[in-house]
Amino acid sequence: MKREYATLSYSLCNIEELTFFIVPSYSCSLIRQKAHNQLKPPVKLKETQDEEIKPKDEVEHVESQMEEVPVVKEEAVFKYGETGNFEPSERKILSKPGENGAAVQLASNERMKAQITINEFGFNMVASDKVAMDRVIPDTRHKECPFWHYPEEQPSASVILVFHNEGFSTLVRTIHSVVNTSPPELLKEVVLVDDFSDKRHLKSQLEDYVKEEFGDLVKLYRNSQREGLIRTRSRGAELATGDVIVFLDAHCECNRNWLVPLLDEIRKDRTTMAVPIVDGIDFNTMAYNPVYGANSHFSGIFEWGFFYKEKLVPQRELSKRRHASEPYRSPTHAGGLFAMDRSYFHELGGYDPGLKIWGGENYELSFKIWQCGGSVKWVPCSRVGHIYRNHMPYGLGKDNDPFMSPIHVNYMRVVEVWMEDEFKEYFYTREPSFRGYPIGNITKQLQFKKEHHCKSFRWFMENIAYDVYEDYPKPPPNKAWGEIRNQGSGLCWESGSGQPGHTVGVMSCHGAGHGQLFRLNIKGQIGTGERCIDSQSGSILHVIVCAREPSGPWTWDKGSGLIKHKELNKCVDVGTDHKLHLKSCDSKLPSMKWNFKEVFPWKRS
Ligand SMILES: [Mn+2]
Image (cartoon, rainbow, N blue to C red; front, side, top):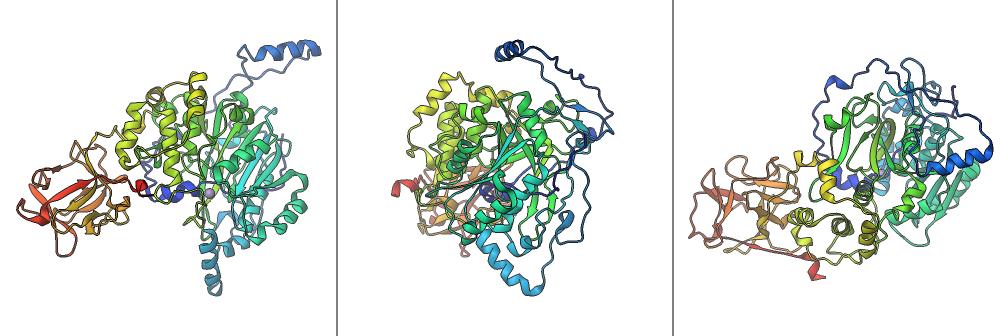
């Protein structure tokens, strides 16, 4: 059966909050996927059976049994060459700006205004305003995807979009896109939750627009104070009425037939979180491009300071599937875009209500799901485009300690609830200055974990997130950490932006951490944030991407104060240029004598 949805368009989802921090270090191992993902000949799956018609009381009896007895559910069937039952019809590509995902060109007199909108929204709204609400975007899915036939009976979906001071056209294009690309019988509603925006275009203009265009299908709710992304999403989940809740960022464009593959995973197992593959929409040109090729399967992982990372899926996981286009397990997800059974989300307690603003909620939910018996799956046939902002145009609100980011407090809550001591220690080795920060009450979370007999983090690491160790081995303990202060001048090491290639110099000690926080581990590696320090040229110290093995050439002798590069047999000295140089060791030189001073910036507040 062929379906006619209104049209196809695309929108992107809620990741900038995370990617703002993550994208610069989006250190996905960009190794090319081998040819094993190429289209394979069709494999006949188990044929589905028509249900017998039974007297009503018998049907009820069978249904009540279904809760206890596992029932073999109808499966999606792959029929190569035969277009899938939920595939929409092709649309003509028009010659309008941005059509087929092309970049929008601006005239020179529009660029000034465009820059102003970029500063205000993180997106080029002048370009976005030129793009049709129902533009065609390129089909970035795996080539098998159009040939999947899904059971007709699927759970209904509430798509939840939360926003704070979004641009108008990017927001409403997201709504159009969801409506255009979702089977009408499965899209119960679009739930908009406004997190206390103050932009004029989000008041009556938005209300009138959605009423006119979508009628009752789109519901708009508003917070009476700023709640932050996490609590606003939780509110959306409470207001939603569909069987499944689908969270998207408010600047997304959904690709062809994106919804049904997500719903089908949840239909088969209501404890599955189904995650679409995220394509990129350029914040400046609105060009739509895949982040990953259709044949490259990535999953979400983390390093020990909880920077989100994506990594090629290990063969062990890929081999579990019959088709390259089938969903696969992932330890975690980026956070903004996912689908879950609504009641399962609430059974899990939703997000930890103690999480603030945004950040870390993706780990909280993923660890909880995996450790308490569910699963997280990425779904290659579901692709959604997302506008990655170039900067975060909003503050974090008032609910905020100026010396401790709410993101880091969230990480600590996740660590303290879901990890055993061994793994907590890896986190605090990576972020030693957080140790001891008061994170509020976690009794309820710990109680939930106990009552639901959730598995250990060790189990999670050994069975689900085992490939984290490939890129991020267990960090050895720190020998010393903190500010590295010169005994002569009293100045401190400073890594500036901390970007690889940046030289390390000295500056006045500020006690605020950031670029003045270093760690020397017992294996001789000096780290700062997720980066490391080495002397690329054998002379000036630089920030580098850490070697996979957490070891290095450095020693520090507390008595003499010398920081020595063992391999070069040289010591760190301050140059007249205020940069750090390697010179012949001389423990009499004050400019070569260093102390580590542990700092806890949050204790100042
Ligand atoms: Mn986003």
